[in-house]
Length: 236
Image (cartoon, one colour):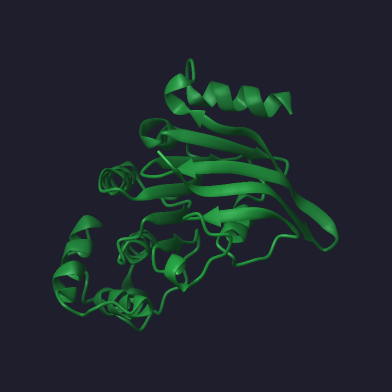
C-alpha cells in the first residue's frame, strides 16, 4: 500500500512557545489510522496543520503525493471537527445539500445520496427537522454524514465518537469500517482506546507535543492497547 499522507518533522509555535516538535508519521491508502493521546497533547493542532488550516513553522506535509493542498486535493478529503458548528435554521437534509455545493458536483441522484447518508447515520426520520432541534448526539451524526458526502478518499475525524453511547459508537465504528472497505482512508483522533483497538490498523501516540509511537500495527501489540499506551506514555 502507498502512503496517502506523509508528515515529516512538523514544528509549530504558539505565542512564542513550541507546541509541536518534529511530528512525523505516515498513513497508508485504505486503512484506519488512530491518532491517540493523553490530555494537552496538541493533537487537534497537528490535524489542523495537516489540513492547512494553520501553518507550521517548518516541516513537510504530503497528501496524495502533493506538497500542498490545492483545489483538486480538497475535493478528495473532508474534515469533521470535534465541536461542530452547524446552521441551526437548516434542516438536516438542507444542511447536507448545502455542503454538497462545495464540491461542484452534479446534482444527479443527490436526493438518493442524501437519503442513503441519513440511513447510514440513523437519522432517516429526522432529515426534515431543523438542526436547532437536534440533540448533541444527532448533531454529531449529521456532522459525520457531512464529512463523507463527497465520498472522500481521505477523511479526518476529530473525536467522532466522543459522548456517544455504546449503540451510537457501534454505528460510527461500523461506518468507518465500511468506508475502509470501499477504499477510503480514515484518520481519526481519539482517547477511547477500546474503539481504536477494535477497528484501527495502525496508530501513532502523541504526548507532550511529540510523537512517541509512530505507525504501530495494532495487531502486533501484545496484551491490551491500554497497557501499551500507559507504558509508552509513562516512559516519557
